[in-house]
Length: 188
Image (cartoon, rainbow, N blue to C red; front, side, top):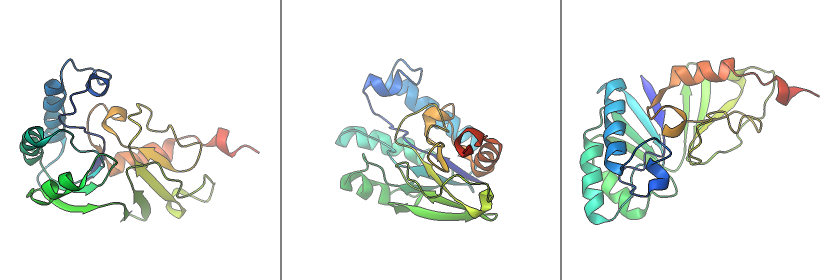
């Protein structure tokens, strides 16, 4: 199975990250991220992290790397605004990180996805069918509304904040977008 998530912010100790997510400490948030991920993802699954996997200085980074190593699956990292050169170097040394890029195009069962940390307009809203469009999967905003940018085009948010602190499967994303009502955006 293929899963997506973004903006884990592992070890980001600022309370404006973990408190809106319902946690009292960054450690509680970290624990929930690992538990939720490993309850869903299997070792053979692919997980695309669309940016901002971890934060922190050198010692915190070592703790973060231990947490990331405990995550199941093959991790594909799409870089975000907090993924520094130093972090990229650390990601390259993790056995479960299989790719790192700034953006990626993914085809799945006739659907086309553009993977990026930031919301990007790839395809306008139309009635020509979902398989004739490119769907942007993104994060960055820490929104709880996975459809916040759908008035602009096919832009779907995968950040933890929009999915109960869990990765979301590609099949669930297709179902969500297929069931989304574009009527108000398509009216003339």
